[in-house]
Length: 315
Length: 315
Image (cartoon, rainbow over all chains, first blue to last red; front, side, top):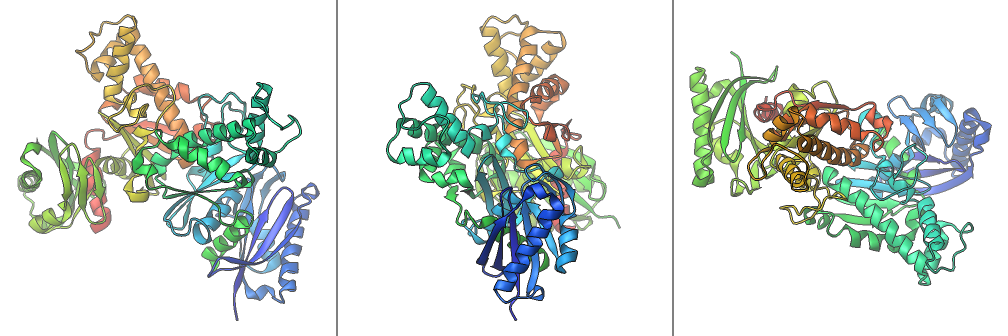
């Protein structure tokens, strides 16, 4: 009888769970439901349990067919104890997720930060699989990173490694939700793309975009039509990302940088100015041996990563 | 019968070797001789062998009392094969150090980069010993770093991790020997301290220092007498180091930054403006939990680290 793992990506809006083959890292089935975060952590944990049971039922599986369940949660997590210390977006504090879900489901449960799980998925079963040193970057509402070294996640002191969205850059004047001013994520994020486009338009750069009414994907669409503000926006955002990477790469020496998240759907519109502007600020000893790649499973990488991580602990 | 390890720090000017107790990490004896690098790698390897034999003889030890010999060499090293790929300062290329010395001495020999060895020494038997995540920084002619995670060295792709002296910083106009412009080490180094002081003096800042005739230690001495250019120099150098650390710390999340090398002898003259200028550019989640400390064995850390590293492989 086959054994599988379940991965769960717990977002502020949706819970996405999937059945993953731990050998191939392929997601065999995906089920999505609303998080209903306003119901509180107990309610959301109930919904996660329900979603997992529904997923198994649909595929005529029982809990005993599952090796483990892995969760990715946006926030500060203690993966050793399986506790969500703080997930601001969900308004969770000190929630012992692994213990509660583990005893209800009767299988081992892991929980870790969502960006780490996304990166782990890409590093083990995605675009980063061929590489030993993988820096995963998510460009969404904010920006964060995680690092996988020979298929092992790197955590850092107090599990705080990877917050490169909060590197303060000279020349960025925007104040950040974290309390600092000039954080990389105030520019390099879906929010930042909109911010920069709006600023350029307010400065008189011609554009078909109407300030106050567009999202980052609209900037991509405008770019494709040659919109001047949109082109300049990706040049600016790509340049800031280049400066951020150029300050991190010499320390870590990754072999691959895998970029995912909603903001990364811009793809080459962002990657091309990024690569161009890395020239001259990142030494060829790094640049010539660095793969900068889009995520392979941008949508499902969190589910796959959470599942693969659980498998690495319990399979 | 006791067993000991020998550590050797191979510099451009001197070879320093020492007998180290692998349990305590204490250097029991140190012997120094000229490198005579102009004699070529075979000559220098002969001198290293001679120095080790002399050291043992002096302490009435035989080669069989030694568990292993570890070398630290400035350059690009392949520690797995024990080969110095390129040591520009020594003019060595593809020198199979571990094999040559190992067969001559009849004990296992390791060879690795000198900054990694210094950091390993501080992380295992120096100022970084109490911490799990140690970033070691050497401020000498240039500037480099290495990273020890739970007493294990981190290498990165192609063993290239740690070259943070070549992070390009906005606002630094100087061209670097590496080919880039604006590298951190053009300011944060013994050379950089002199460069900044000379520039300030040429701009009319009052100073007792005479451009063209002073070294970084003279800037320290002038600082102690309240010399205006010297005070501003350490403020500027400390500020650049702060920016460099602020861009590396969120990625790595070290618990301790251990600063050594000749330029670090400036001590609090440099550390105080560094700590001050980290405020506001490094989030308190990192800053409040980060120890910034001078190296404990600034002179011998390379010897101790090389020895401890050899012990970790062969003891």
